[in-house]
Image 1 (cartoon, rainbow, N blue to C red):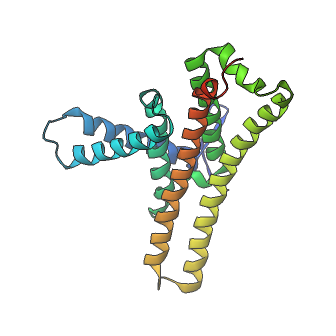
Image 2 (cartoon, rainbow, N blue to C red; image 1 turned 120 degrees about the vertical axis):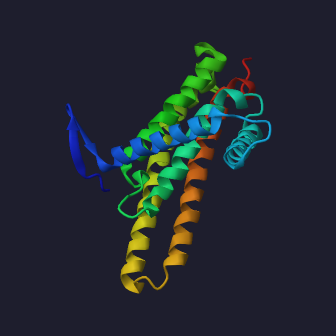
Length: 221
């Protein structure tokens, strides 16, 4: 895990992974502002591209949570877009993907963990949401609680491990083969980065949808 110290912000040490993350957030914000500043009934290339991305994400969310797509769309879409850029930014010379840093992937996993319960409580109310932890039997309560933490841990470690191993493999291959095979390595990196972003975002979507729909799946007796 590489997170070189850059400067201190009070008691907090700011490393390269955090700076890169801030940069990605700024890029997404600027692109969103530019693409929505002048919307037109006859869209240009930028608006067409953005609308295509939004439609694709909306369809993916609708397939999992058709009745709550508008509610969870901003969170899931933002997460997916951030992960795609974060996973691919390592292709830029001098930069490393922040998702190869365990602290970053842990923060993303914790964000998903909190969002799951936020959406669940917001949709069902606290009492109804907590009831699903006692279904189908109160005996399973400890297992439900353990599963919440283990899947959060798995989210963080899976993304971190895959992105770290991907960059290490690319470096090792380049050291052995030099620059004789840069294109296959580049394609492998792009494909794997997109796959890992999709998996993380889809798992987050499934967890959030499960929390929202838990009362429908386990109605009170």
